[in-house]
Image (cartoon, rainbow, N blue to C red):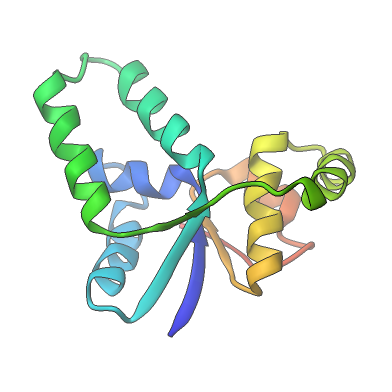
Length: 137
């Protein structure tokens, strides 16, 4: 089974129709069919919650957020924490690529797992594409 790392921008396309939602949906379907194994960082949950809280133009109702969380849980994405042994590498790579520590943590996870990183974040894609396999959806 192929491992794939996703950042939070991919998951958001599962809930908010926008450009790239179809490609993100393909990953979700493959995960459900056990054709791939999705991984992310545990900060994914913070970013996911924040994105729902701040989504515009309308406020998301609590019941809808609860449904989204249940749907997300059912996908059984493997969420991995940052390890102390990765902190120095994270700091240095973040400076080298000139991206946030948070975004860089997804790049490092993909590198450690020898897996492609899927993102909808154009800046992350542009900065990290030469460092490892990064796919823009």
